[in-house]
Length: 545
Image (tube, rainbow, N blue to C red):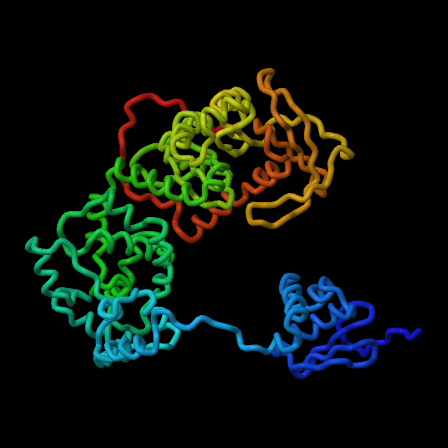
């Protein structure tokens, strides 16, 4: 018997056959003997010789598919062609149907009309064919449209040129659009139309790359539904885009615009210059009606939740303390963890998705605590806005089915609250405030858990049933860390896998990262205005101690 010796570097098809790709050629070996060679890009010959190997019994169809990374169905088709047509079948010209609509005569007429300067739609109407058919022929190169001569455009302006022009503007720095500004001053202009011109070296020009994203989340189309501005030079779209670009350029307050060249920022909006900060504040005062803002926020929240219903079914709720350093009023004191002090502050309660994406927030100037805000304000709103909730029939058929899930920290730990939410068919997941003694470590098993990002990580988990406060049966899931610490969570969700619940609970850092990032880059703690509102009734607040 001959031992199957093969040259170095070959890839095996099976124990008797192998192949090698080198210098643009594929060489097939039977042991140490080359038996066939063809060019690497010669697909027809590749299909012919591999089909021959299958028919001769040198290799199976599955071995050919695995060795060359081709689909099994393509190998089967090649074998069938070899049996039906032989070697010649791989080198025949494919039979194609001739043009049924765009015959040579029609193509000639169409090209003649295009050369005359007619548009594609007009040519299609004259020839009695579909416009799409004509457009496909143009894309394929069978027809071509004459190149229109472009008017000579001036070269883009430089930053130095624009700086000189802005300094010499007749109505102030950068205010060069005299006619439209005069028209706006006498009430003859609703809002100036943006006009973009070629410009080089525009500071912060990269924010324009975010414009498609801003439009996709509904910044402009939803804004016009709820807000209006009186007639003037700057329209609603320009104001909203300016505020968005300011945030993206990491300018934490409107006052920062005083120290930026107004003409350069105007180029980002297609205007001669941006409004002064005083003008911008007046326009914001007109837009800051609370009912309009709340309605706009609800509309955007419903849109974002509807775009990803699965993400909107599990929600993080947490409070962010916004410290007030002013002297206009004495706000109640809150414990600020990041400063380890009790300071006068307001609280923003944020509702975020598993990946940290924010849906909405509620500001509490006087904070009654997470439990009251959850039950009285957040849950009623979520009951109306969370998409794809189970129908009443589905809830009646399955006692453990829930509408959506709330995840919060120990501040919201309350068996009574969780029981009331369970009656509403809303599940809660939180840390156990009084976990008691550690469980034996032999109860924990390593589980592969998939995070919201798609990454899979191992966790040592254990689960028991727990009766909380003598009134509610919950699932208690504990995670064992490498240091031996046990993190305990409780949940009224009786259907979801324990690994998924643990991943959701222990990934609350996504919301904390959101707070930290917004603090560093977007001035999350800055006040929008400096107004003071009266509180008509006495309100109970949480004792900071």
